[in-house]
Image (tube, rainbow, N blue to C red; front, side, top):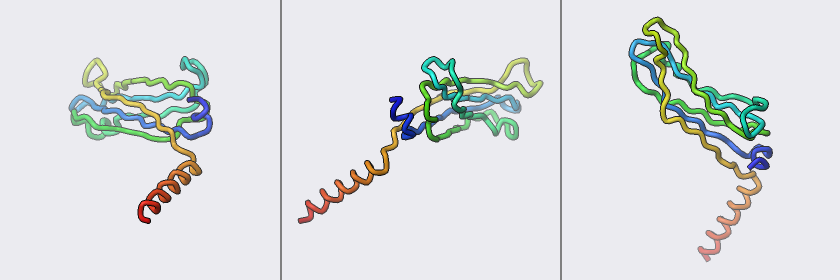
Length: 131
């Protein structure tokens, strides 16, 4: 809902499993690009990037989970998910960075006054039951 996003009450969670070939420092990178239009052609409001930072120092051929959370930028109308690979070694002729199980989700965070009101209602119900 655009009104909730514009009120600043929406957060995101981005997650990806990234890896590289054993002894190869190539890496995959997943970008989550927040745009101000529905087609991803408008202005970029911000970008979150998940990348395999272990590939450069410890290319062991294993998968690692990377995640990021934060507020959805006000004005966001679409999110473009982009997968890029960087070829950083002469080990082979093709990039050997991998990405899998990429997820992106949003959550509405209630206003503090709403949360306080719900808490008071819950407390009132507990007190009523005790009588």
